[in-house]
Amino acid sequence: MEGFEEYSRTLKEKWFRSAADCLQDQYIIRNYPDYTQKLITLFRPLPEEKTETEDDEEGAGDKRMDLMELQYYFEQAGAGLSKNEVFCTSAALYNLGQREIIKKYRFWGKIFGLEKNYIIAEVELTEEETTQRIEEQERLEEERRAALEEAEAEAEQEAKPEEIIPRPPKSMYKKPPDVPPEKIGEGTNQKVYFVCNRPGEEWIELPNVTPQQITAARQIRRYFTGNLDTEMFTYPPFPGKEINYLRAQIARISAGTQISPLGFYNFGEDEEEEVEEEEGEERIPVPNAAFEPVPLRDLLDPSMSFWVHHGRHILKQGRTKWWNPKQKSEDEVEESIHEKEEEEEEEVEPEVGPPMFTPLSEDAALETMPAWSVRIGSQIVKDTAIAFVRSNLWPGAFAFAAGRKSDNIYLGWGHKYVAHNYSPPGMESIQTEYPLGPEIMEIEDPSVEQEEAWRLAREKKKARPEEEEEEEEEGEEEEDED
Image (cartoon, rainbow, N blue to C red; front, side, top):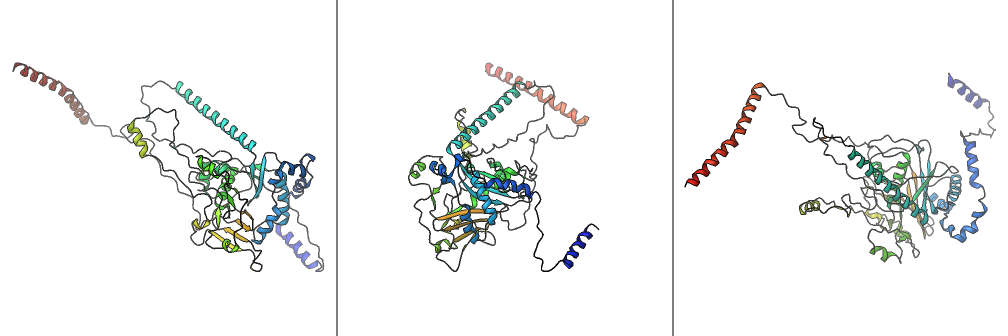
């Protein structure tokens, strides 16, 4: 009965409304008037101290990007946002870029959610801000270590004396050491990401990603809700909330889909030799000023030999640079030769990923399709046509190359392609908590006959050493007489 009135109204409107009436009912989205008030703030003029002239004099104009121009190229590939959303997003990015801590920014992409979507901006911080954050991170790490040492010292002082009743055996399981996260400005934490649900809303900075979060994100599949504070109920358990899961997926997508034409990026001609000499120094790719455009026929080659990765590969550890779990500090005591030989046998081989600027031709193909697909933007005007590349492993990742311009974008659900239906990993086998032995094994009580036999055997065992001593003394006396 509830739907009858609505059906009756619709039927009357259909029969009694004139066919020449061109007016249409306006549908107003819920809470849209409140959102328009936020949207108006994007188009207000900036304060006088941050005019375009002063920004250009200070060199801040280098951090700007023309999102409308990039949208022109991506529209030809069938990927992009509506013009209204692109214009509002461009204004929101410009307001974000006015912060003093930001050196450069770019539109990373958009991830869809069940309730809301995420608009993502990739940001490069200034050197002063990066140094300050690294020092703060090291200070917090030192405080955490000091707190752990104090807790262990207190536990040793408060240890209870041994009781007459034997304590249960201790567990032999040793938890493997946690892989430390990469520093700010390096590896998976090289860039900082800001997100918002719609243009005009507040930009929220995502936290740094940890190897444990990346490892867990590789084993689960969960759609985003659009709320950063949503709890994650998954198996294996994810260490964090949706805000951490979003950051882990962004790191995985960036590592696998950030591509460019061959020679578009390099390590810098002046600093290349110095960086190679320093061990442990991370080489950051920079745009090549002397880049010569790759011919269109080479970019459209199905072998994908003229497209390369400029994002660092994430190892199984969840880091771009391998960390040795058995490395020790210099203050440790010297061990014996035998222990050193055992350590040499148990040394872990370092994991090595593909080097920077690896061509896409070396990527593993999927079961039914290649990892990448390339096509031309226009078959009619090939002189000014554009080459587009689409990732089949991460649906929603696109890249284009037009002369000296190239860029990447992601518009998808934030999940990897799976040929078969997803099935969560099975439960792990139960581990033995204590070593098997008579102390913890159930044994039947002995009978009276068995106890008597055990007592006699024990008495004989005690008497045997006395007899042996008497025989030895007699033997010594005989030798003395001889």
